[in-house]
Image (tube, rainbow, N blue to C red; front, side, top):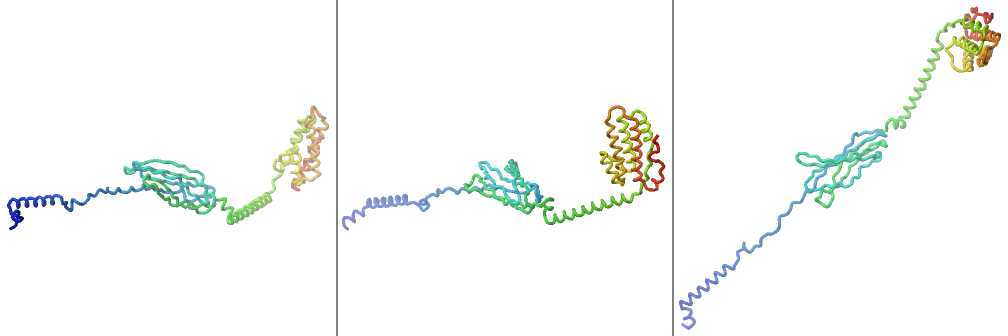
Length: 338
């Protein structure tokens, strides 16, 4: 046995070697990490859920679906959305719908907020008035509404459905159409023929009326005027004399109004001859002249005026009286010349 082996076999050396080996094993076990201890901890934050944009409802309607030309309709647009804390909804400027046959007149806006099932809902309303300008059927919309809801930088878009409006021609428009002109022509023709028939019926009725008895003149007025002529005649006397002439003449027909020329022309149209018209014109002219003379006038002239008036009236009435009655008259023109 050599010297090295003898040293190694010593008990003391063997105990030291065993102790060193145990120390090395203990340190190795302590320094070597486990598989679980070597894995790095996960520090990635949990993902944040994406916010859902606020939904905007858009509903369009009109107060009526038809409109006559020249009338108006009202386009009603209602926007609504749910109000959430910290989120502001902003609607961009609207370009209200246009149609060729509808002219926009006015836009009335209003806004309000209500509670529905515990949720606050905001509303914005547009009432747009249109004038119905041209006949036809027109669509208002569909209308896009762009808005921001405070979540995304890009705008969202809602749509209001199209609303159809029918414009009728109206009464004037119908009359201006070919069919309307034809109707007007027929109505005008019917009116014309109806007027012609009425005139013919009126003439026929007048021709078929029985001849009325013509009253005999009452000579009491002439006698009274003759008595006044023997007194002091004046302007009023001649006014009463002229009135008696017209009263006697127009007992035969309806009362006449107007000037002496108008009344004489009416008598001429009724068949009084020109010779009798001339005598009446002379009497009436003399009466109108003497009516404006102030003071008393000649009694002889007054008596002669009464006689001439009585004779002229009798001659004119004889032309209007039926032949048998005129022949049977006993009142001669100069029967009361005293």
